[in-house]
Image 1 (tube, rainbow, N blue to C red):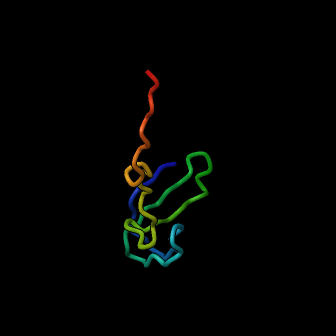
Image 2: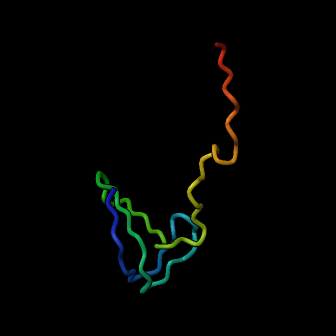
Amino acid sequence: MSEKIVTLHTPQFCDICGHRILAGEKCRLIRDDFMPIIMFFEHIHCPEAAPAEQPLYPSHPRSPIICNP
């Protein structure tokens, strides 16, 4: 996949959130390397993009390790 930042000449829909990206607005264009016909458009800062998941271990303390001497 190759991606670049482009300025749109025609309005498109964001493939992440489904909202419209207006003409003249900058967005991310993602193109498949093996099938260049397939293109995806995304907001640069998508309003509904999910934040990265935080690991579970900071909120869950480790259980004590019991060693038999």
